[in-house]
Length: 48
Image 1: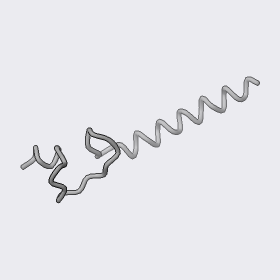
Image 2 (image 1 turned 90 degrees about the vertical axis):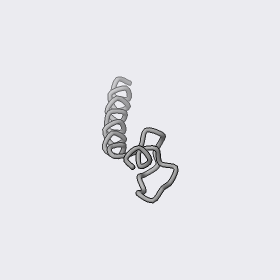
Image 3 (image 1 turned 120 degrees about the horizontal axis):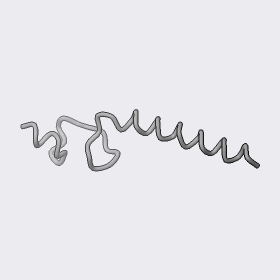
């Protein structure tokens, strides 16, 4: 049953890598993508 732990480990690493790629450029408050017109986006408010 060692292969199951091996498989789960690599699936976890792939999932973390994908989440890190998609998290790049997003705001600090969750998975919401950036919209320049979004009035409640704290990153956009700080840039004004």
